[in-house]
Image (tube, rainbow, N blue to C red; front, side, top):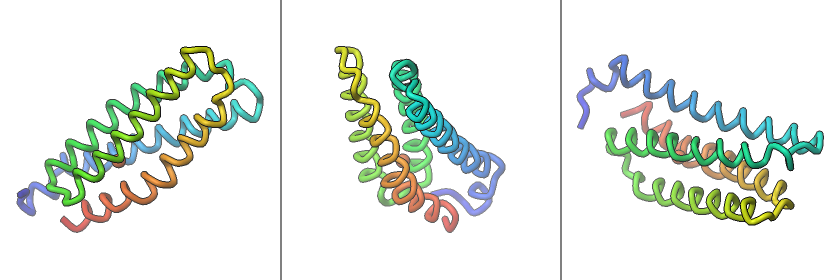
Length: 134
Ligand SMILES: [Fe+2]
């Protein structure tokens, strides 16, 4: 268990800042995808978006899971299972895209919206509250 002093260290605050920064990047990607969808250019940027999402998912989930483990978050395992489901879904969408299915724009947007609404706003927020008081 971390001591009070280490929990208030610069490193700990930096980790919190980095987590927010990570989420900001997902919001940026979602806004870009939404704008591309509105201007009917998402079909052209979809490949790059999916590649970016996969890279983002790998580094972000790894970082978040490491923080949760280090801080003994009680729902760490359940949270990792949610991450695994997102990884599976993004891999399926990417495989669909590579196999030539070009009509998945709305599915990708729905996936990102679900991630923000169901995971970041609920599960990540729960971890954030835990982080503040421990
Ligand atoms: Fe998460």
